Length: 401
Image (cartoon, rainbow, N blue to C red; front, side, top):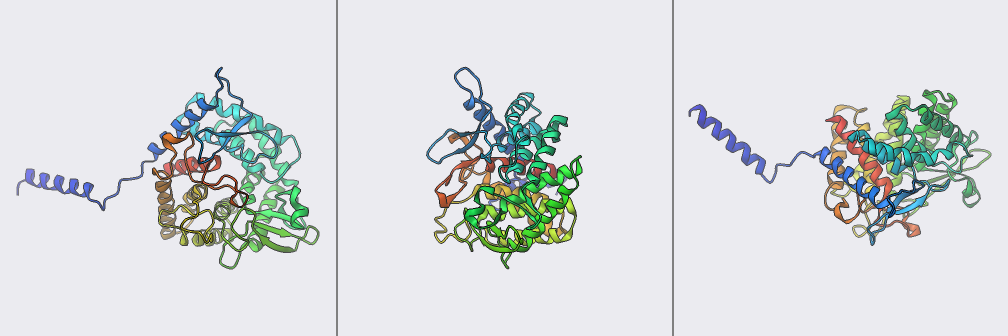
């Protein structure tokens, strides 16, 4: 066979392989990030009134399944999600370098400054300020942004009870729960304390974050490494009283987003401490989550809902875990690293399909998240924090390629 024949045969084989039903296209991160950018512009256009003016104190929160426009919430002390939209804009600016997006990010970030100047209402200050001002400072190094983060970290630290060893999540619910309550979501707010302790803040912020992670690791999980949503402690003695749910199916069930917060939170704690206890624990809470996923790697809202497979999915939990796994995969051995990264890519592939992306139907990135099912709130909806962790995960994946 001459060289021309050999080349023709090789080309024919490669084309057959490419067309084989067993072959799979490589996941295109840029395509998905460009999709996010387009949806962001749709949202910004939607937020403008008839005179082209945006009210920067009104922030996208959700789009119910039956609607196709954002429901916005006013920026107030008790609206915990208002840091995610400016965070999305900062991520979009990081990807595109578009100065007009940077301008909008600045405008939506600024109304949150008051949180650094007022007493802490609850634990959500990390979500509110580190997703917005944290990304803003990371990308601009504006010293005014840094001051807001440091002041907010000090405010969050006032909710720490040294008798218990954790940060109080809901001061308004102490009487209802009969003690100091700490919810799993609180693990995400520790990142701001770690950051502040290394960037001019009080070193005690590091100790508070570690104490919170240790106490949570000890009492907030069942023997199989699944988590309670809420852990309640005696305010005076610090003794663990009981674990229960608030947004999950039952006190004994694995609420998907709660377990997602645990995976993400302990990955961050390991990054900041390099204490192997936290790395081992991050893998335990991850492995039980991965072992129970459905085929498309997007969980049902609660793994123990008896109505599965007819229960709603929670895309937001998948987004949080995908982002966390891309970081966690960089800390573990080769086999585990491959397992975790492959799982993250599988999650992003499913989330980026027509089954989960909003596309023309809505200006959000994603469909099918669940906020608070027991309260009948945000069920099978587009929710802003799903979009935030989706674009974060895409950017993290892009940096590994």
